[in-house]
Each structure stands twice: as structure tokens, then as C-alpha cells.
Amino acid sequence: MSEEMLTEEDAQVVATERALIGGVLLDRGRTIPEIMPAEFFSDRHMQIWEVIRTLAEGVDLPALAHELARRNQLEAVGGPAYLAQCIEDGWLVIQERLLPYAAMVRDASRRRMLRALGRALAKRGFDEAEIARQLAEVPGPLTALAPWSPWAVFEAHQRSLVGAPPLPTGLASLDALLGGFLPGELVVLGARTSHGKTAMAIHLALTIAGRGVPVLLLSLEETAALMAVRAVSSRSGVAYRRLALGHALGEEEQREVDQALAWLEGVPWGVLSVETLRALDEDTVCGAVAASTAPVVIVDHLQKIRTGDESRVYGIERVLNRFHATALRDRRVVIVCAQLNRESENEKRAPRLSDLRDSGAVEILARKVLLLYWPFKHDATRDRHEYHIYIAKQSTGGTGTVGVRFRAETGSFWDDPTPTGAHP
Image (cartoon, rainbow, N blue to C red):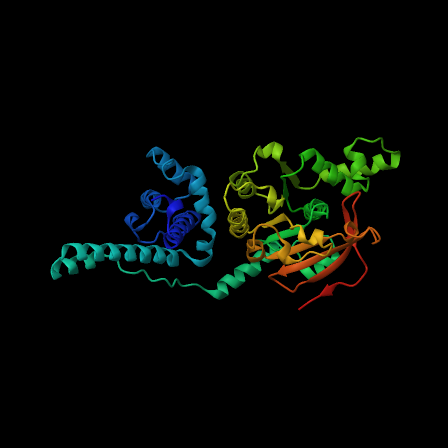
């Protein structure tokens, strides 16, 4: 049966099998649960598991792909892209240990075998000896509880923070409430069009890279050249429009631009745009995020990614799950810019968490959600430098509102001396 035609229960079994395979690959085969290929529901998983058992300890993605190709089975199981998906799904297995997932695969196999046996008995009327023999052949359940040490896990987490403290935003008032970004976090920046999403993405990229932490910025909307111009404008204070259009600069302006370029050359950040990616489909973008070695990846923006689903909601949810898996698996910060729906624009009001477009998955998967708001866009009588950042969700602290200053001409942010509002 095609995996697109599966019942909800069987689809969950397939997802569990895929996660187990990914977990074993991430673990490099140090632990391979004692279940047989025939216990897998999916034919492709049976083939993959057979090769994993053959390669045994040390098995990883390249070795598995090579052996499947040697057997002329690689394309039949979905090719390298499907194996990469197994790896992405395997992060949770590594977090929770392999044995519980193997137990779920074994349990699902037992249920299928018992159902099939029941149908056969009803049809053929086996004698008691034959029934007992067949029941005895059904594999027994695996123990789902794997030993673990909360003490050891906690201490490992504390040690990991020694060399990688939370990354600041460069805005003291925001950091006071937010505490910075932690490895393993998926962060969402939500705003309406022209409310400063890309400017904030560049601000964060330059702030973090300025501390010596490599940052990759995926621009799905602008060219690499224009992103460079934005960065120069933000750093130099020379208006973006003048730089983008090649206007003549005064002597002082040129000096500021030269200094900005020298600084930008010396910090570890880079831009990937559609010119390099060549496509904006889900696999290309998620693959670029997963393939990057930068500790911080910023994607601008979510709604530009093509998923090909009839339901945009399901497609975006899957993309966010893949970003979340990459952040957790590689202990990286993945920051995703996202569009808000038109309600806040039509009602000329500050954004709410419910305004995030396409998917409630943002509210579920993101560890932090920051909603950006420039009041001047809705009311020309307001101070044009007034800017609000709403911490709509934070898994490591409270929510609240921060007031900062924003210069739209250069995409620059700086602290506002007014107090920060916080909620418990």
C-alpha cells in the first residue's frame, strides 16, 4: 500500500519506524535493537533494516547509502532524500533512547500478526496444537523502559552551556526579558510586511557574528547583493535606498561605508539566496539548513518555502518540524521569519500570536516567538522611531513587551530608555 493511502494508525507506525532507523544511524549503530526486518510495516524499512543489521556497529548515513546502492536498492527505498528524512526524524529517538521506539515497532508488528492469525483461524479452523504453535512464533514484547540518569543528563547540559552561553540580541532591554538564544532552540520572528522582519534578521545576524559565532542567513526573498547592501546600511548609518541605487556619497559617508565593509569582512557570517539555492521547495531549503555547519541559521522567510501540499497548513507544519529537528539534533539556533495574516493590518493594531499565518505549529514548536510591530506604519502621527517587540511565547521565561528604537532608512535598532513591561 502507498504510504499516502495509509490509515492514521499505520502512518504513525511508519513514522515510528523511520525515527528508529534515523536514531540508529545517529547513534552509529552502537545500539541496534533485536528486532527483525519482517517486523517492519513498510517494505522500504524492511530493506533498510536488513542492511543496517548487516553493517552493524559503525553504520551511518554514507555507509548505508553506499550499501543500498551496491545492492541496487537505494532508489527503491526513496533515495538519499528519504534516508536524510530518517536522520531528521531520528533526533527524538536519540533524546529518548532507542529501545522505546523499537518496542513500539515490535508492538505494532505483534498486533498485525495477531490480527492476521485471527483471520486465518476464522477461515481455516486450525486445531489447538497448530494455534498454539503459531501463537508461540509471534515475537514477545520488548521492554520499553531504558535506564537513564537525570543527574548525568543535567550535568551534561550545564557543561554544554560553559562553552556556549546564550546568544544576545544586541538590545539590552530585550535580552533582560529574553535571556538570549540557547542552542537547540527554534525561534520565530513574526511581523506584517514592511514591519522590519528582514532588518531584525540582519541585526541579529550581525550581532551574533560580531561575537565570533558563525551565522548563515538564508534570504528567500532578496538577492545576496541587496542583503549585503542592507548590512552595510545598518552598520554604517547610510540610507539603504541611496546605497541600493548607487547614489554618490559624501566623504564622511564613504568613510563610514568603508569601515562597515571592513568590519563585515572580518566577522563569520554568510548569505545564501535563491540565486545559489536555485529553488525554494521544502527539500532544498530544509536541506540547506541541515547541511550548514553554522551554529546559528536564520531563514527569511517561512512563507516563501514551497511545500506542494494541498493543505498549506500541513506543509508548513512539516517544514517547521524539520527545522525544529535540526535545531535539537545539532544544538543550533534556527531563527525563522514568518508573515502575519492581514487581520492586524486591517484592524491597525499590534500583532497577536494567533495572527501567525498558515500554521498553529508555530505556537507548538517554536521555543520563542517574537512579534515585531512598527506603530508608525498604522499611524503617521506616531514617533517614526518607536518600535515594539512582543515576546508572545518563551519556554524559558515569561512573556512581555519591549520598546526599542528603529530607523527604517537603515534598518537599525537601538535601545529605548523606557521601561520594559513583563508578565509572569
